[in-house]
Length: 282
Ligand SMILES: NC(=O)c1ccc[n+]([C@@H]2O[C@H](COP(=O)([O-])OP(=O)(O)OC[C@H]3O[C@@H](n4cnc5c(N)ncnc54)[C@H](OP(=O)(O)O)[C@@H]3O)[C@@H](O)[C@H]2O)c1
Image 1 (cartoon, rainbow, N blue to C red):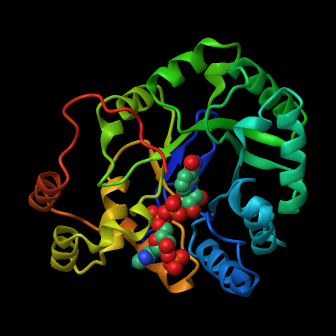
Image 2: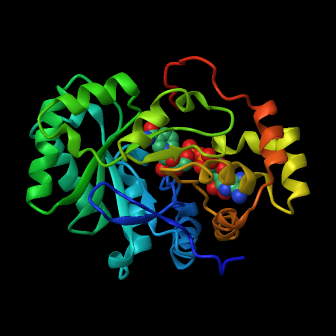
C-alpha cells in the first residue's frame, strides 16, 4: 500500500505539502520516550509524511527539541510547522518566540508559523510581526489556529491579513461542526484547513460503527478516521504517534477506497451539522 503516493495540497503561495503529516503534542515530555519519538518521526519522514506540526507550547519547548533531533541532517525534506503562544504574539514577542523556536528546532527557518489561538494582542500586530519574520526569511508563511469563521473574517480585514496560509482546527468524525460554515468558507478562499486531533486522541477508534466499517474495508479504525478527513478538499491531517508501526499504518490511510454506502453509514453514526456550532477546541 505504501506505493500509493501521498496526494499533495497547494498552499496559497503555491507550495505543495502532503495531505497527511505528523503531530507532536505530548512528545518531549519524558526523556525515556525520546528515542522512540524521534524514530517514529523519522519513520514518518521516510514514508513521505514530511509535514511536521509542533508548537512552543508542547512540553514547553520539549517537543520542538525532539523535532530538531528527528530532522537533523534532513531539514530540506521537511515542511516544518510551529506555533506561537497567544500571550507572546505581540509585535516584538512573536519575533522573540520564533527565534527561540528556531534555536530549539536547530534550523534557520520555519515553513509555516501559526498563532496557536486568539489572545489579547491585536491581530494587526501579530500579522505585522509575521510579515517581518517572513521578510527576514525566518518563516516562509504564516497562519492561525482555532479561528472560527468570524475570527477569519476579522483577520482578513487587517493589513496583510489575506496572506494567511492555513487555519488549524479540531476536526474529526466526532467533531464535524466546521462542515457547516468554516470549512466551506476556507475552501472557497483556498485556505487549507489542518485537522488536528484527527482520531480524537485515540477515542473514536473504539466506536463500534468505526470498528465495523473499518473491518469491512480491511482497514484499521484509525485509518478509517483519517480517510474520512482525507476525502475532503482542502484538508491536511496531522495524526500524532510515537510508534513507527502506527506511523506506517496512518500513512496507508491514503490508500483506502470507501464505498458510498459506508460513507452514508458513517454519516448516520456521526451526523454532519445542521446548524452553526461554535468552533470546539482541545
Ligand atoms: N492547534 C491546536 O490547538 C492543536 C490542538 C491539538 C492537537 N494539535 C496538533 O495535532 C496533532 C494531532 O492531534 P492529537 O495529538 O491531539 O491527537 P490524535 O492525532 O487524534 O491522536 C493521538 C493519539 O492517538 C494515538 N494513535 C495514533 N495513531 C494511532 C493508530 N494508528 N492506532 C491507534 N492509536 C493511534 C496516539 O498514541 P501513540 O503515540 O501511542 O501511537 C495518541 O495517543 C497534535 O499532536 C498536534 O501536533 C494542535
